Length: 187
Image (cartoon, rainbow, N blue to C red):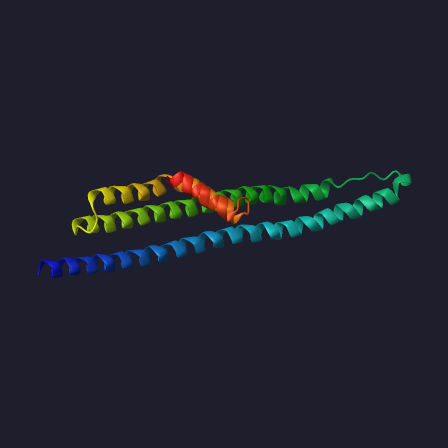
């Protein structure tokens, strides 16, 4: 009966773990979609203002050509009226650029936080498996400590391992160099 109770508890734990994971994935997808939508909205606003400014730049160009053609007549080249109209749009562009930069930074930070949490969840899951294996006497204390230390090392060096992964993705290092760097860190 004791074995049956343990098996039932393990099944419930797995079910709860699957449920928690599904909720977390749903929340992550929702947050990512919201962030990307907000960023796209800011970029669209900027694009619309850029189009408006381009027409003002074209007007300045036309006035300059007229000025060059009429240089001998003593007419001054004056576009201050157009520049004055452009000022609010130029200020809005600067504001949108700052918001886009902030949003990009926030999205990168949120992605890093999600990946860090995922790494922590993987460690916690590994620790639970090892705890169960140790309780069931499937592994020795020495094996437990060795495997837990290896999992802890991955968690401790998460950011460094992430950078190495990014180097591989960007083609800065080869697959062999990637494996060697990871192996050196985890030893």
